[in-house]
Amino acid sequence: MYRSRGELEMNEFMFFLTGGVGLENKLANPANNWLSDKCWDEICRLSALKGFETFREHFTTHLNEWKQYYDSKDPQEDKLPEPWDKLDVFKSLIILRCIRPDKV
Image (tube, rainbow, N blue to C red):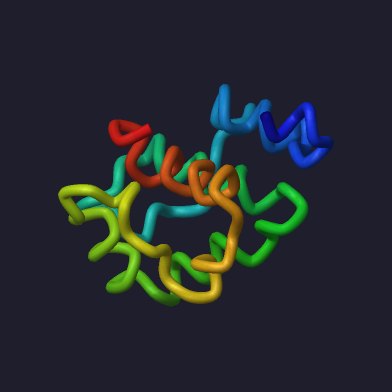
């Protein structure tokens, strides 16, 4: 539906399907007590996409907010922490896929 209306960026769609492809991540997981390294790697790769450049930095400086989102029973129903709460549905699903892939 998004694609037929020209609203879907192919790089976002590919990231949603694959989680991105990258080399070994040299950045330490700042939330390794609750976030898997795989999820952290995807957060880091997400920050390479247009529109998400500041996501990794925001995540690391707002860990408490993201932990609440992570711990939610139904994060797909919750608002993302600001300013990410203003994203369209598909972009929000990309973030959900990174943090809680079990809910996509």
